[in-house]
Amino acid sequence: MNRFGLGLAVGLALGSVGAALAYPFPRDGDHYETGWTVLVRGETLCLDPYVRPSEREIECRSSQRP
Image (tube, rainbow, N blue to C red; front, side, top):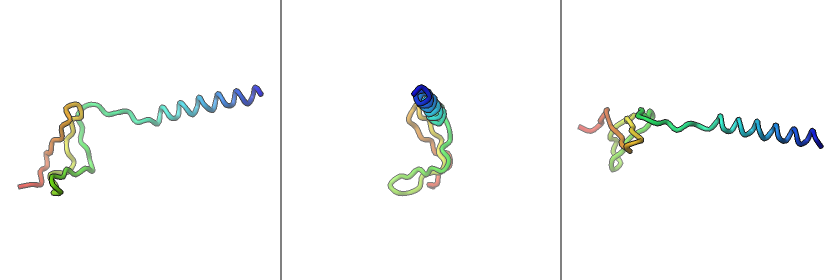
């Protein structure tokens, strides 16, 4: 019974460590979102916007509109 308890404890510990290491860290600060398209009323406004999550802003530097 000791082996079973020890194996269970080691398995739970390794599983917890693996899950914690696999969890993605939130990105703070400004960054480019590649592969995203900003639409306004169904029309493409820009591609790959610059994002400021702290201010909830999306800045389109490559505007597709005239």
